[in-house]
Length: 472
Image (cartoon, helix red, strand yellow):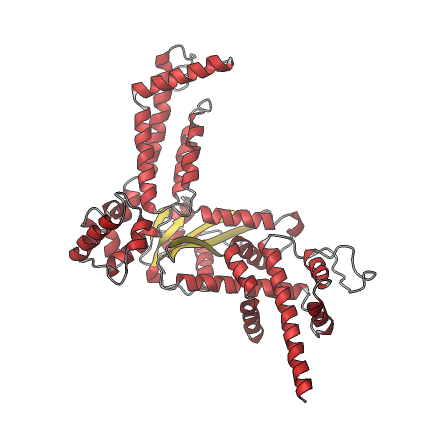
């Protein structure tokens, strides 16, 4: 009897090992963004009866069995082979659920920011995707949590319902939501009937911020359409790339935009204009190229004939760009977060709009003590992340909460756009008929590679989720 019992346990362990191997293989293919299924999946241990190419999943499974006798034996003796397309879909769904659960664990009681955008995929389906930005173990994370097909209702109400549907699975505390980051389209940004106004009914403390990268791009596009002959805007490319970093905090953006504004003001000076004029003249002589003379389109239909005419074009470009930046990055749009300038050198952030919105009371004594502590511990111009790293919540409880709110304020919604890039890579011509659910699961696993690798190392997590799915 003992021998029989021992053999049963051994068989169960071998079956579990094969199942975990299948889970690991599916997750590996998803993480690497490789096709899983083939066009013809006639799988047999006999080469004569098998298809020539059964797809990456079955071909890799067959290949690895040759070098793993234990798994091969378990596969031969298993009642259920666990290789069907349905099992693949179940594994992908369970892994995506486990991935979102890992994000939920990371969030815990953290403050967070909701990032969402709408796009059209390669099959002309309208998708709404949601990412979350939060602080975890001293690092800023921007995580994708899902997307849904909203083609049936493209209104603000429909988009709002899609966003709320995605967020339901996380069971987030609405009071911890600092705000939303959307694009500036009216369906998203409308104060009464826009998505941000509708979603705010659930997340009442949240504020809306238009993506800073979008703002700068819109400013550049507006100025570029003024005159196609003006090529100086290429120099602003570094600005937009800087704003695409997910690790930037809002204080860095405010300083960056102010620095760009100061630079444009400097460009308007006579000294700088003649410096640029001299440099372009030298480049023209060295290159021996034909100089294209623009027209003063808005002033006269004659060609440029003097340095003064060039100066008019230069100043017109500079003034247009400066005006657009002032309009799109106005103080009103950042009013809730002006206290970023007051940390750690002043104490008036204790009564900022942000502290009032989240019902925070920061005693002046706590602010003075933290300012003194931070000035001793850090460099002269610390960032919000620097301050957050040294702020002990057990000592500076209220300021720690304020810093956590400020540091998660987003610079850009580029995280959502990167998710859409992953979606488009997966939804290629080879996968054009894929259902949205499978596409979402594959996209999350390919996008959040660090969590997917963790699930590969512990396939038991995915197995447990699958067992719960079966019970339901």
